[in-house]
Amino acid sequence: MRRLTVELAERRYEILIGTNLIARAELIKACLRTPRIALVSNTTVAPLYRERLEQGLEKVGVGLTPIILPDGEAYKTWDSLNLIFDALLAARCDRATTIVALGGGVIGDLAGFAAASYQRGVPFIQIPTTLLSQVDSSVGGKTGINHPRGKNMIGAFWQPRLVLADTDTLKTLPERELAAGMAEVIKYGLIRDLPFLEWLEANMDGLMARDGDLLAQAVERSCANKAEVVAADEFETAKEGGRALLNLGHTFGHAIETGMGYGTWLHGEAVAAGMVMAAELSRRLGWISRVDVDRILALLQRAKLPVRGPGLGSKPYLELMAHDKKVIAGSLRLVLLKGIGQAVTYADAPAGQIAAAIDACCDA
Image 1 (cartoon, rainbow, N blue to C red):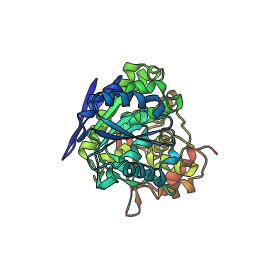
Image 2: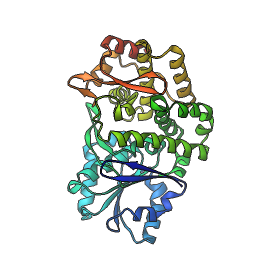
Image 3: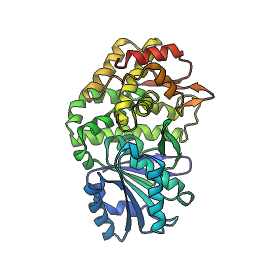
């Protein structure tokens, strides 16, 4: 089992990475205030892993209240959040009850937001079951739901007490979901870890073939990168750089997700196309070369990710991007590349240049 610690100003928690961790109920029990959890999962993941988790918890004397939601980004809404609250209230869950998220990023975000809100805050544990959630959304405490005008626009910062990343769950992951998670893995190399990017270039074929040891290494290195960034800027308040750098490709990508309808494009697919747009804009600003852009394209294509966005038109993209959380005082801060492995936040890109980069990277 690999072990990382997220060190924050007022708290710390562990990320545990390994095989068969879902059956290790004692790891969960050690984080509980009382021997009771509310398990939030969905109709796809629960049939695969709920029984194993429940049996382990029973052996260590922990009771479980199941809350099973529909599967999909389209359900990351107030209605789903209220289903969680209804179940917690019906089961008379108190402030010592721990909410456990078993699923991908949607479940983690919903359960985390519920934990941040229910009775003004209850403990929370993440058991991410997709590559994307293991390397990104389960770490760092961002929770929330979508709004028709923008992705993740309503939510809270709420840190988990434990992240349990069982890499066995990646064996049952559809190929499209595996690829979507790889977009976030590649992102860490692009923004701050060139040696990791070079390692990914050398090992991408094995990763996509689900080599267990390679995947565990990729999850660990990704989580280590995110933990360092989050520890330095937990609430994304740094004026330059900081946690915002984790959003490479996300402003463009969120526009794709919102514009196409939540769930049409997977988050990682939209981020991949968004990273290409960010790279192309960086090239147009004179910061990176065409060779650099082609290098990024090649790695994303090897990960079976889209490298062109849908043809919404640059004007709709810009309108959707204007609702992004990184807009401050009317100024859109984009995460761009000064070089491979060197990301910056930049608020002075001309609208015409942004539009040209979008048009160059989208289908007609």
